[in-house]
Length: 122
Image (cartoon, rainbow, N blue to C red; front, top):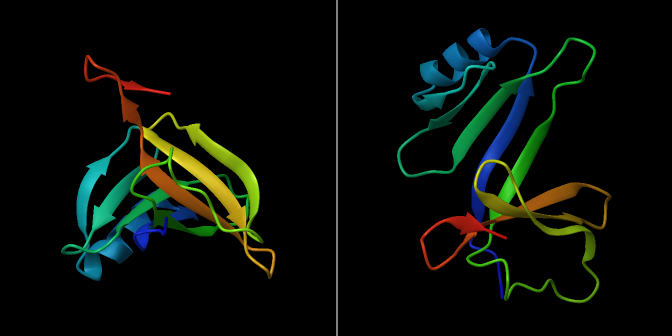
């Protein structure tokens, strides 16, 4: 099974307000903002950009997230190093981390399974 392309770009910043204004000036619309200096943006039908503020002693990071249609049947081909298998996240997805040949980490994300009552679950 293959990925469905780019799902999202996750960014960390030292200044949530400046980062939010920057992306809005590029045509991204704020989809939601949290109460802890983070939020999600989207431009048209493209991948969303999630930005979170981190302390000054942390280096800002960029992470590209690839979409996987379903976590359970997905198996990377041999030669792909799985760093962490699919795990449920606190924000309603399942996420796997793999390492590319140059050592970069990539997140693969799928929707969480739903039980018969329609609740998310692992």
